Image (cartoon, rainbow over all chains, first blue to last red; front, side):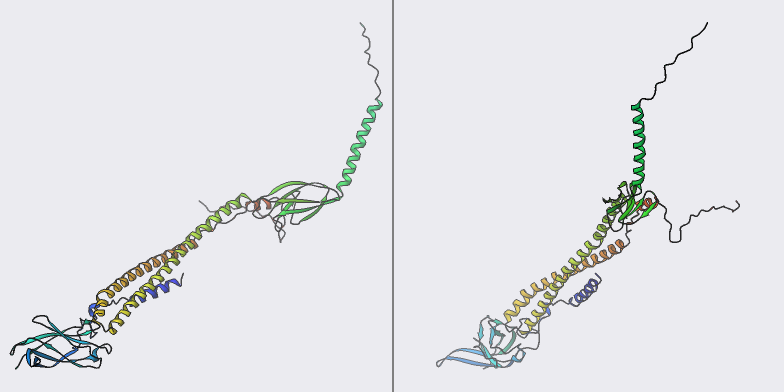
Length: 142
Length: 260
């Protein structure tokens, strides 16, 4: 009987150690978490305005967003894609599957007019789902 | 007036037959007394098979207190008062036959006081068991439940820790969302439930431990029934036996000299 009481006290003390609960809202450190709030994993290197041809016929003008991907912030090296969603109409552009070593990639905003600014929400796609998106804007210049 | 002298019948002589009977009776009685007297001098032996055999005593002929299994006595009737601790006195008369060894078997019945004492002792033991074993068993069971609850509590906590590790290593944003929005809240609920159960079980165990201690101490203070062998007092009063220092009788008077 005397041995039980110290065990219970020890258990109570251990119970005290376990009181810290895990708050899901505080978990924002994984770079691929849609709620990630660490250093940005996408950086805009530059924007280019380019023409798209079908043969010799110009069919579209686009703004290309050249991005740097901070794969060093990923939990582990993974193949991924980059997806950009046009903020004006919701259409998206997604890259091919990129090998883990790839750190630069581009997405393009279609149907632009010179002189106007266009924005895209760009995110990393891994295993079929999107990470947090970052909004980048660029102006179509002739 | 003259009266004639009374006449009495002539005295008869004793009949020879009557005379023979008287003599025979006299001879018979005399012979019987002679034989009885002679046979009383020839000792006989009694072997006593008394239960309990190891500690019985007896008073012989209201005079001698003895403690042996075989007695050799002059032939004739002798009074025996047998007794043993916790037993009732059995008073009986045994006939010793000359030059013969006889066996006497007797089981001394338990005294009424001893039966009452046994009942009280049984009640005391049962109460003590009830006050000690039952709470102790309940505390033990509760402690086992508490340990089980603690293991569940620890496992639930470990599961949450695993979830955090998994969060840090997952490379699928969708899987991360599912982990954060579905899996972890469920595990968190399990953890809280396990924590609640553990606290409840520990509280119950602590309460029972306090109750057990209280009842244990209380049972230790319970008065143990004592056996007063009244038959022993009766038996010891049957015959006076000198003690180690010979035994004395003492009396005294007290005068209250305080002036009122």
